[in-house]
Length: 296
Length: 271
Image 1 (cartoon, rainbow over the protein chains, first blue to last red):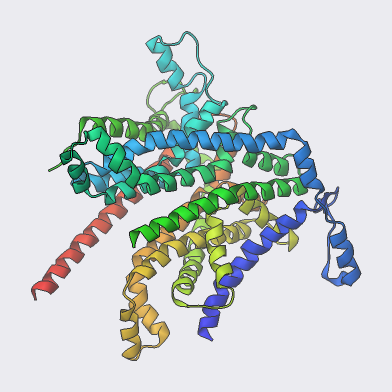
Image 2 (cartoon, helix red, strand yellow; image 1 turned 120 degrees about the vertical axis):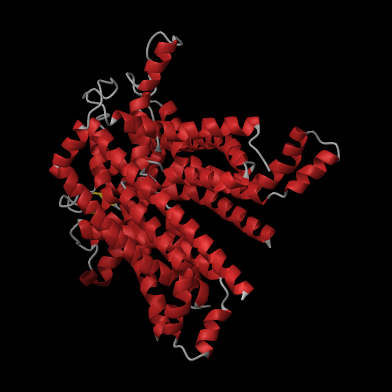
């Protein structure tokens, strides 16, 4: 009896507040926009009986999805989200790998402190970390003042409200997610392997590419997915850092909902976003599973 | 004894400068007396004073704190139960669905979680406010808690629990006297994670809140959309300071605990 209660409580909570809401999104994505409260039809009440239920399902259709496929705004937003997420993941890797490597090769007594310094920004507010860049990248911002002072540029650059600012913010905020799994992989690496390679005539650089990189592979893959997956659906960064030319699907969904109040289209956008995310999520989980099996 | 190589020292210096300079600059400029945020006009604590007078901001901070305390506590209870079910309950009908529902929210984009919960709250006619944000935060945070706690549950020796049961404990007593003390560090870090996630959340709170409740991130977001403001700089500096203090003291406490444990083990081995 107690076991049943133990299972039932979290189970029912998740059913009611995760699965059911998700089914509602699916249903509304198949409904039509209406000038009513709530602003969609059809609606259905338990009391209406079987015929009403049949009519209800009869009036659901894929109209919103057809609309999404015809309006190229949505296509472009999906493609551009994928592109932005991909490019920023690669930059994060380029910045993160040397840092993870540096920490893994640092003197032992330094490592806990260095790791804490990587994790600390993760505990500080995401919004504030994005905001911190606004004062630096704006037209009168510190970066422009600095570059002008150096004489590298003649007039201030426009960085804020462009895709460049979006890349900077994504790399900045997601960097710990890249560093930690790579560090974990590098930390397990047995130094004697590198010594053996060098004894056998490898140069240090050869040993790095032949031993370190292949053994860090799972960490690199995990880090890339941990950046790539959330970056696709990012809302805050494109709203604060991006400009009118920055198209990201999370922002489109947000605006479709809050500005246009088109719930059915917003729901359809959400469903497609999820379908796009399923592929990287499955690949990520496969990588995690491989890693666990390799550790056994 | 290993030392920093030239290459590693350089990449770490640049890396940490990249991570920390923006925050340090933000803190420095929070003490700028000018309203023009990019022009330095001398040291002043004026913006901290104005922040303390800002009733709206203080109300929002209070609401955020309430939401975070309630939702992280609820999430810790539910998440620990869920972890226990995942690791210890064995097979039961719908187990796959259950573990799916635990892991899915971790990868679900916030916009979708927020949208779906809002549609549910409207569907059942629940007034939106503090309560709905608490429900929403509890739901996604309990998944994080259960991941943290279940990794601790899988790694500890089950025979300890069995010994307690053999010695006449009821299952609940065994949990309270044996399991809970062992998983306590994971439960505490789960609570801290849930608390921070809730404090930090903008997207889900924006969807699930109503006119009666505004949280700090919502307030900050609507202020900074219009550009940089010195008052927000001051607020951000306070938040960064509090987190830094918290993280440093937590790591000192856990270090001290580790040292004490090592000493105990040594004493036990010597006896």
